[in-house]
Length: 219
Image (cartoon, rainbow, N blue to C red; front, side, top):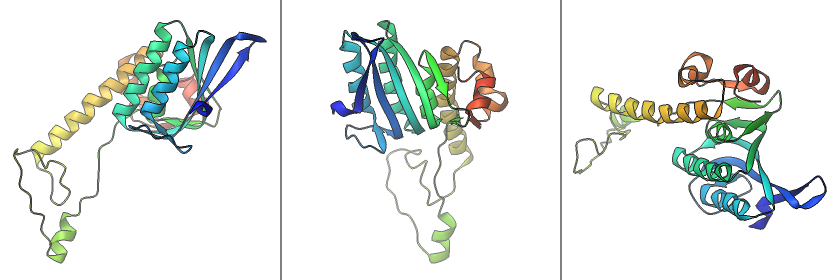
């Protein structure tokens, strides 16, 4: 819908506009827009609309999100890079929260503005769930599966993980985290990948806007 994007006229010139695109709530793969969440395909369409508008000289991401799905976030990130490749300035305005996947998107923009009390950071990856194996044992319930590969039920929470499964899951988390760190390092001129993967940033901490500025995460 057109109401997702607002246009701000630059210096009184109607032929120069800044498109304001809201990124709010959980970022997820999908097309259905909600005022409480951000569907990746809808956001990508809005970014593409701004990119194709000859009057748009800049885009502001009006951001209030704790993050969301990694693939959906990465797809939006690529759409942002298309804007920048075409010479359109992209900036992020962080509101109350701009963490995890929200920061992933922000790191791919030209400039980041945060309130001193904004909650941001959380530059990390998590995979988890509730393991109810002992509960099943307690009530005499057993999971019965038929599968084609040994690792097909690797995340079956009705049983404990094997050492090999834990290793594979951790390797997957580490791989995705490396991609996240690469995006952040590419977007922040004073940070290298090692800076992002170590110290307080590497611990996936949440920071205030003030602390994030000290760490070089916001401008």
